[in-house]
Structures are given as C-alpha cells and as structure tokens.
Image (cartoon, one colour):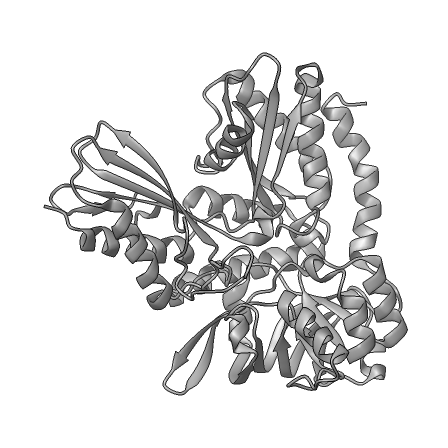
Length: 290
Length: 199
C-alpha cells in the first residue's frame, strides 16, 4: 500500500522535473518563435531563453529563480486511503531544500517567510475524484511576475463577445513587458467571479498546441492569439514578432445576468508537470517522458 | 555593439552607454528589489548607514536562489525580477544613492528615466527567466546583508565576470527602448483591433 512518504517522494521528483524542463509543447513553441525573429534585439532575447533552457536541463537546475508558489491539482481514486495532502506538503518542504526551490511563500500581511514554501493554505491543492486506479498529481510552479498581471472583469451580457475581446486585448496591453513575454494566456469565460479565475488557470494546464474541442471556442482562441501577436510587444517587451506563445480558453455556463471573464497570465517558462502514481508504486510522468 | 563595463561605474562610464548596445559586466553586483528599496530609504530617513556602498554600483532587481555549500553561498539561479514594481521608489533611490546601473527586466516608467538622465545612471535589461545563464556570470558570492528579509529580498553581494548579455534599454540621455516599442505598439493596436472587429 502507498504511504505518505511515497507521495512526498513523487512530489519532490515531480517538482524537480517541472522546474528544470518545460513540457514539449511549450519548448517547441519557443524554438519556433526564435526561428521566426529577424531583428537583433528579439533574437538575442530568444537566444538567451533557449540557451538557458538547455543549460537548466544539462545541470538539473531550475530554469528560473522564481520557482513560484506551488499550485496543485490532485485526482484521487474513489477508494484512496493515503493522506495525499500531507504527502504533497512534505514533498514541497523537501523539494525546497533539495531541488532547491526559492522560498517564496510568505504571510500576506506580515511578509514573514518561513523558508520552506509551506504556510496557511500553501501549497494550494485543488481536489478531484476520478474513476482511475492511480493518483494523479499535477503542479504549476507559478511565478509572480506573470501572475501579478492576471485580471478579472465582471462584464454585462450586453458587452458580449466584443467585450470579451476588448478585455483580453487591453489586459495584454496593460501587462506589456512585465509578465516576461512571450506569454501563455489562460482565459476563463462564464461561471462566477471565482469560477472564471479558476478556469483561467486551469486553461493553462492544456498543451498550447491543442485547441478547444468546441470549434467556436477554438476559433476564438486562434483569432485572439493572432491579434495579440500583431501588437509587437515581443520577447521581454523589447519589440518583436512573438508576444504570446499560446492562448487557451475554458468556459462554464453562467447566470443570465452575468458575463465574468478571467485572464491568467503565464510567462514563457510555462512550467507544468504531472505524475501518476499506481497502486504498486509505479510512477509515470506524462508531461516529462523521455 | 558589444561592450565590457566594470563596476563601480563613474558618471562618465554610465553616460558613455547608448540605448541598444549590448554590455557584459565585470565586478561587484548587488541584488536589491522591493524590500531593499523600502529599507534603504527608511535607513536614510533615520540617519542610519546602509550596509553596502551603492554609489556607482550595479543594483540588480533579482531575488536569487542561493545554496550554502560549506561556509560559502553559491548562486544557483539568478534571473531578473519585474522592475516596474520598483517604479515608485527608484527615482528617489537613484537621487539619494546614485547607483550607476539598474539591472532588471520589463523597463521602468518615465520618472525613473528622468532620474537616470539627471544623475547619470542606465537601465540594463536582462532576459527574464534566464536564471541559469545569469548564474553562470556570478563567479562567487562574497556576502549577504539584510538576510532577515528572506532569501529573495536580501542584498546579495556577487562578484561577476562576463555577466550578461545585457541590453542598454534606458540610457542616461533619456532614450528608452521600451518607449520606442510603446510608440510602435500604439500603431499596431489599431490593426489588432480591426482584426477582432473592435472599433
């Protein structure tokens, strides 16, 4: 039977892989964007990004010093007996020392830093139950530079699709050079205020080369991405062709009188990782194969 | 054009740099972000001495990952943080402490550009997230001050060689690459809005 220690060990391994290597879809998008730049300044920015990616992998070092706060999504089998939450917290504590991760989690008012990335409600875990026999843990190590550019709009239904487009375009313009572009944008439409923001972040879990299964939403994803890449903000806001690597939308039905829209901004280092832990202890990392 | 610069910088050194140039730094670089700005200005108000000499220094908006190996600290990952968070404090910091260069990412607002022009300071942009590349230019860490502020917020004293590449993004003559890009974005915005069917 699995123990909390097994979960903690899997969490450490997951965090190490996640902060050291990007998922393939993100890495491919970055290399493609690098190849498309012609001007010196953006080319140099992409060169630094690509060299840094390669060096991080070679030396097993976090690619960015901002290893974020750890946002988890845990899916449990119905008959799960092990305390997964406790295992994840222990894993974060150990990974902070061993990977190492930067101790980022502080008290929101006193700003006191316990030094181990563990505190009230942090690491934050979103729980789900699934009908599989394995435990699945996904983590996003979300840096603050991009997260700080996230926004919520409570639009009126009459503002409609135009209002949504306007809000997203304005959010990108307002964020400008700050979130370490080229960014990845997660958009949540509908639900309620909290659901729109939650969906915006969950949208970032989908590979950026996969479009939404609803063709209308897929079309909107492509249209918004193309428009944003016309802005010329470029890598690090120093100008260039690629401002955004990918844009994913998730939606939920909402009240007839509301239209909430959330946008979650992710820097180029779109770090996400998943581990599946089987009942016999076998671990598979679908985001970090090979 | 690629240039090498040595810290501390004289005012003339800073004024010799032009927006768009690429530079590499040799010498000491101090980290300092949100809390260092707040604390340094508080110290000054209370007539207390800050623990390092900022005059002519390169101040790096960076909260690194440092690891202790034996008695020594080693820089593991040390990319830049978002400079705009320091927009409200930087003009005053430049006026009072006279650093020669601010290193960061994302650029800074007009009051900082003005303070840089007035006092002879430049803004050097390092690629955000390129933390391993940055750490490669940090040859040793000779000390840490204000460690009680936490690892990301402390002043780390770093001896650098060939630290870069850095882009002179705001020079000491009032020229900002970010402002240039901003003008182009305003033009491009019209095309993007037309594509989305927005007025």
